[in-house]
Amino acid sequence: MSYTSNSSILLLEQLIANKLPDEYKEFLELFTNFLIAEEKKDTGNIFYFDPIKALLEKEQIKKDEDIYYFEKLRYLVKEDSLTTENVSCHSNNSFIEIERINSSIIIAGYDGVYLYFDPLDNFSVWEFWLDDGSVGKIADNFKDFLSQYDIEYAE
Image 1 (cartoon, rainbow, N blue to C red):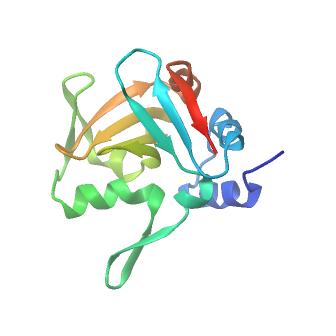
Image 2 (cartoon, helix red, strand yellow):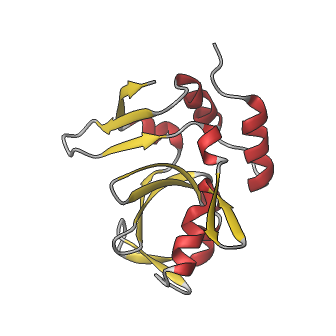
């Protein structure tokens, strides 16, 4: 049974001008409302995944400006003045260019951390920490990310 609307996936792919990873599209078929994934290592790291329809919901960020949920990081970085050119990368003690955040696609989150795809790095999986505005690469692709996490609950 398919829970995910193909038209929603196509719309998101049109908006990002790119194809989503097949593994992610298959993953979206596992739930209709949300999914909780917990890291297999005993770290307590979990992520709440929303269905594709939630990623396409618009949020009003200013009186005359709306954004899609999936593109929220570019707004947070710009409006909160977390950075102007480079973003601190805690996974390798370096920096990445702001353009990498501007093209990001949020796919999950939990407790001040957003999980996102970086299309400029072959859809690698990253985390963005709201408290300090830093990022870290978690996996080279969504399949590798899933191998590190267990599905704890899906609805």
